[in-house]
Image (cartoon, rainbow, N blue to C red):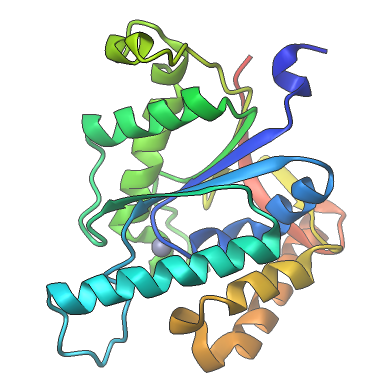
Length: 244
Ligand SMILES: [Zn+2]
């Protein structure tokens, strides 16, 4: 077994706090139970995810929301058993696939050297089942930047040579798991961690509030449907890329 496959370190890169409590936390919790160390990287400050009824959405209100959402994400992370959570604090609602964002992601990938990385799909899925929230522009910008960071930049010494001077050597991530992708080729059984996933989601009180029972049922029903398609009880699904 190579050093890369023995190293049980994972990283989930997402746009907003709560994205992966919806999308992949059952799988992440399962892998943590199997001995994996998992880090979250959250690209935006979450300051644009307040109430639809709000009319004071200025800088002070956004800063308060940022603090609240960090606290909620840390609480959700404790439920899942995450190791570290990195907040990159780009403006929520304005995330772009920039070279600066790519460099930030490469820096973290080279420093923590994960074997598995989860990222959102950079592509839209034109299917009636897909809620429009899946196509939030921040999610797609995050997916684009993360994919560019994973390949080739993280593993290529010629990308961001200044990182070599900081001791951040190239690192090849072995497995990419893309959530919300147009083509699904991989499923993970989450029957033993579905409750943990919903408990983690419930910590995002400012987002899910009183709707947690309905959301929990919706997520469970969705996982059951995905499970049926893949011969499992409850499943989360991905497009898995093996970067050999
Ligand atoms: Zn989001």
